[in-house]
Image 1: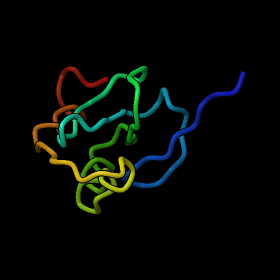
Image 2: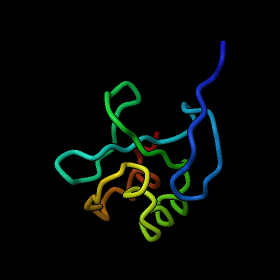
Image 3: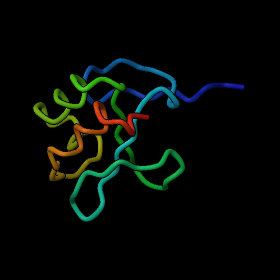
Image 4: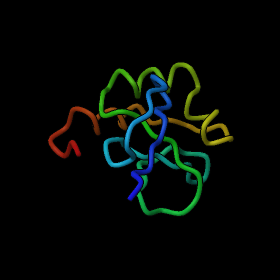
Length: 84
């Protein structure tokens, strides 16, 4: 069975989907999205540096094909106790 690969919006590395964190745009706001959610998703590696790079270089906007507002608190996903 083939493993789905996705590209990190920050560093551009291709990885198995299960190793990445998925984000979606909801009403123009970037939110963490479940892997099974419908619609276009943007992925990052599980490193804060990739999230920061995708934010700074508009990687989320390009991947999602829409401008998104990014709450800086989303960075806690990478460092907080609920890191998954």
